[in-house]
Length: 264
Image (tube, rainbow, N blue to C red):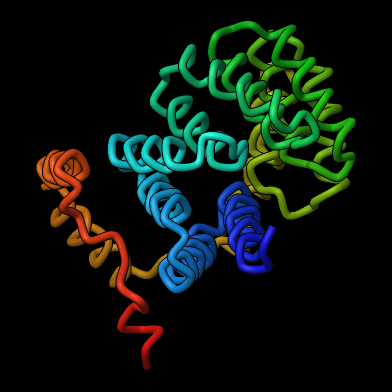
């Protein structure tokens, strides 16, 4: 594998970690770096993959699935790309499609703990809690420091009505990452369901404080700018239709030798 491809994968893994930690703008910057590198080295599958990542981050799931799908057709043996497609399907609640993709990807690379974690999240959506817990256990066995898997295991335990076990799992999550405000919020829910109201309130309050510190709550101006951008993107479905037509006609210009930014 070339050094450039290794860099592309590292950028995506870092973006995934930042997204899972709630650091959305930092994740966006890494995705854009990956997109520019894909353009620079003319890696067509990863050009589409990072477009999928960007659309997924902005919750434009129709476009994200389409970009990931094209990327996976161009590079069908990449579990890395397939994981992105599976996650997007899961987010769309196309759970059976997602599980099929995760199964296919995990046969190619059974040692990717992220695949097992995402499969667990999807199985939990299907209320297949025992199978989901086994997937999280597999992910944790592959990477004992994957606090996201501990957190997701806790969420599944809440959904299964096992509140005390969930509290314990969130405590383990927070030992690995004391700033995981999502785990703290979920721990508050579990405490509340288990009848520990005062502790639940403290956990929720602390989760809000940590979230503000970790994610840098956006200013009013940046929120207004985001609203304006979302209005512009309401034409997404029409643009996606044009994109599909261009792919079919093979008329879409995939690459320039270098982007304007890179040429400077």
